[in-house]
Length: 488
RNA sequence: GGCCCGUUGGUGAAAUGGUUGAACACAUUGCCCUCUCAAGGCAACAUUCACGGGUUCAAAUCCCGUACGGGUCACCA
View 1 (spheres, rainbow, N blue to C red):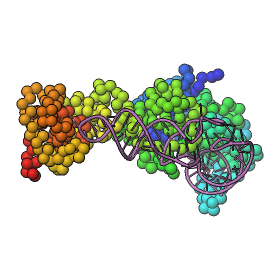
View 2: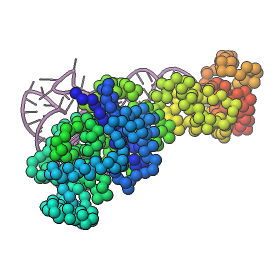
View 3: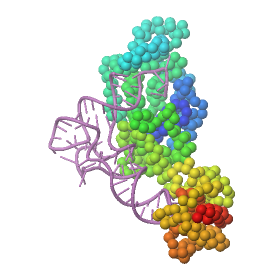
View 4: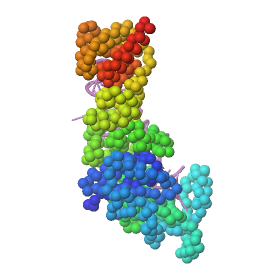
């Protein structure tokens, strides 16, 4: 049994979209499930028109952030290079193999004009009739071909498909698929600019790089028989195919860059953790054997099993990602969490007096994504205007009158405190509650409202008071008292 | 339109002919906890597996048909 070798072969055309990332993940997992499996990165840049500058770096960054470390690739080399198709082309391999395929009867030279074929296709499409190009160049004499090429005429190399019989292949996910050869198009393998098409480069590269498992989206399901015909013409071994169901945005549309759907970069910018994203997308289209849902990459390597990849499209549910991201955030040690969100806190809270460590502590159980932070902390720097109706809470048994009394009492105690630390504040207020023989909420709820000016806050009255420090706490209580007195 | 693929709840999904009167998770709703909001705990939530036939003692699971959805039919990948 030879080593498992898989490859992630993206085109450098922009941000990394989620479906693509999931394919990379599965490719990585298929390889790394084995101790000696090899995961390869190959850049497919044969469409020179679609190249986007910097896109290759995005690919490297994404893989790195996700921990999908490749063993061979353009940046780290390997024994099967080069790993960029445009560089591979320089050695002339695609042309060489294309001509070899012609010799073997698997392809032919074609001089047809692109526009002419396009014309025919449009007519067929308009009539809603199936279109298959019947290439007259198939019957050109060897001599004529040579003459026309020598004369500098542009040509492409097109696959030959015998319309007799059927072609089958086994897919690990979808099972055996059989098609009539007569329904297969004779597609272009080598473009007139000398670059190979995906259809051809893929087969050549996968063979030369000794790829054992081809993992890709199921949009390739219908062209796979054509690739197999090429393998057969060359007499090469075919890889194991693993076609994955699409990642959908909703019932009808795939998740895609074109629709402006969130890319990996967008999600990270919104405050989702790469590990959480990886974990979540692993579950889109694949189901573990156990009920476990939270997985580290290492755990995924062990648990992953191609046989449990599904066949129907899975809708990307940002709500569940959000939940999972929260799980990751809460599972972190306070130190790690604090380090992670400190930049966000510093952006949201400028006043240097406030203890950012304490703020991190109250935030940890309350946020799901990092972008929620600013809105939660806005009341620290700016004491918002608020309505006295905030004090009314049926469950807490509070209203404006009770709030007024509570705030007066709380202010007295708090202003007498020399030492401003959480346990001290806590004991002082709790003693006061005992003395007054009231419910916790009747004192603490109004204090929290007075200190924050908000109905909902991260942390309770005592935690907020601790962070605000004595001076600001008293200032806000005074302000709140004045507002209450004026209105009563 | 031809060909290929798919169809279990709002979402991800389990189940691979019989302890299923369909797991588990997200979301939702309710309760508990509680100084708010969260977090945490508990509970509710598909008389039913797109629909119609068939096979079988027994079907979400096998077969056929229908409907609907997706993919593909590029000198894009």
